[in-house]
Image (cartoon, rainbow, N blue to C red; front, top):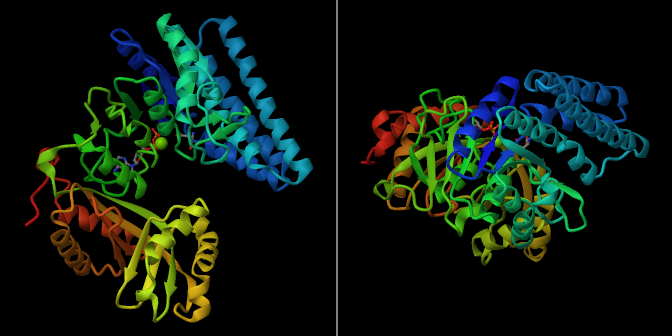
Length: 476
Ligand code: ADP
Ligand code: ASP
Ligand code: MG
């Protein structure tokens, strides 16, 4: 199973490179390809959706025209034979017509349903898959583009759908296996699926990684390779910490924590589908396929227990504070807060009790803050009426910087050492939290301090040193 991200299919030259990688792999094993939209396309499609929702038909139209020109130019550069080229350009025009119709409908109705938004957002993958399939055909492989509505069965949670694995397994067996048996390389659209009624859904931004592991698990793949634009999972986001190094091997748990705490290299749910079957996931660079990349394995490297592996950040979160003199006595307050958050389909990055100030602090995405605050008011209604709690307040915008490692052995030492380093750098700590007692430690800081904190912690744990790649530096 091989997934190629947006920059890996960003133009005709990049798609040629993808075809080269797939062709080499297809020499010795069956390959299923999953593709993202070309880089930047999903953002533009969502802008078109927002413009039409706001009644700006011309702006939405302009975006669709621009995207059509870009895709047709790529088709022209990739496909030599005019019959195939005209055919794919015809198919693409059909997809753009679908986009235009949806935008016009949104303007006429003054509303854009989540399902319409998903249909528009997913056009990018539905456009890129046929282009990649044709690039493979140009190289002499047999290939077929598949829209994932045919193979990934999901719930109806538009914009953040989750798969029904049994149904997905069945569909993959019926649709993809026969292709593989005939030596055909399926090129499946990432990011999307369909409900049992056949309505198109999307899996959330960056969700093509998730598509790849869903399909990998459904087909019992030997491995899932996620091809992207960096050498693998790095010790930090290289855009923010240029000294970051590639980590040769990390565990599912560590990679999942990194993704959960903001490392864009993986969609946060990517590892869920493979946890049970223990299929290894590789992150590799399609711009430099000679590099081995990072292996994400069930347990990672045993010798690294207790060490810091990487540091990651969420640039903007919102604190919600449940406070009051009796907060410490509220039974199972964190557990109840957690359930209230999940009940509104939000995700708390952090939930801590502050003994000092009698508070429960919960950090969530700013988009969910209001919804979570009112859910918490509902959950703690009786404590609020009885005066045990004073109120639920929306706090300031914050950033969250998280150290990820393996095993809780040295958490205390790591915590002390981090606090001292951050203090020396005059980074003010708003709160400290350990979520999955397993392997991570988060520091809540001001949004303006996030970059500094990342660099300081990366340096403190010497994550940028080559030695630390093979065997992370021992914490004193
Ligand atoms: P794709 O389009 O291939 O899915 P993304 O842009 O979604 O690629 O993810 C890759 C990017 O993730 C990298 O270019 C890098 O800037 C960012 N990133 C953030 N944290 C990390 C990390 N710890 N390791 C590697 N890349 C990271
Ligand atoms: N194209 C989608 C997005 O930009 C999915 C992905 O790239 O993984 O969110
Ligand atoms: Mg991505």
